Length: 314
Image (cartoon, rainbow, N blue to C red; front, side):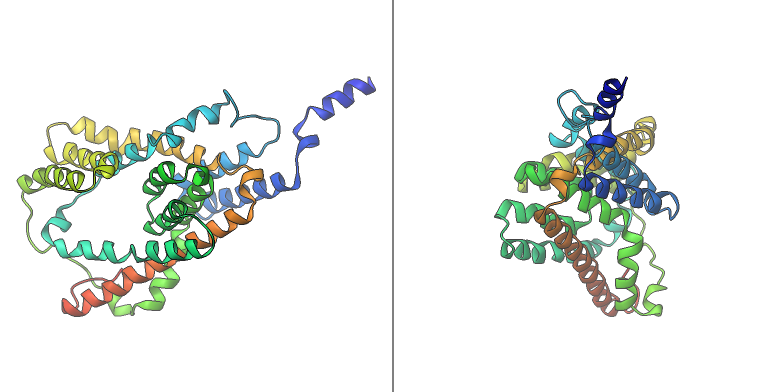
């Protein structure tokens, strides 16, 4: 009887668990608390946190061989989920304000400054060029792009970069408000922006087609992301396939978000995650995210001045 109990005890996770796994489980529980109790981006944070929780359960083998999460992770590793997310985003995006006021694209461009600062910082910390580019892209505050680029340039860093990118996206309500409040006045934050002119349906339909042709010819490597984003927008603006647009913005978006989130979390295995390199990546990611927010807001202030107070820096 004693031997049976001993064998049973040895076969349990309680026997095999290490302090590193306990730390990761605790971090996952903190993320779940933030998502459920504080409602910080729960659609992202709950799948990520639960994936993190599951993968750090010893002896479960969910990220090994035929393990469930390992099979689902193929979609992230092969760059399938990120373009699908872009399709869904495109189907839910109205580019009318951008078409009416093309200058507003400069705000987005200014917010990318953090990418380049972080790229240089990562190089100085000993990362290679491709690794530094993958780390820097966290500053774009765009999880699917970060995943897609990293899967091509530095797949061995996909786990920590994915966790950093999506965690900071989920924690936007904590990270961005202090920076925005520090750099803007109450008057600037209260500016109500209005669309400058009426945008016709023809313009909205032609826009994704023209952007796809021009951008993909200029940057063929961006075909998957830009192509899916613009395809999603086209099915929205065409008006002839409302069921496709509805499916993309609702059912498909939520399904892909679940798979992407839980597999992103599943790349945070304690043995791989709790390393000096990961800590550097998370720190650099926060720097990139913060600088991107600050430069975007500062450029917004410039546009606020030059437009006579018609542009909200936020």
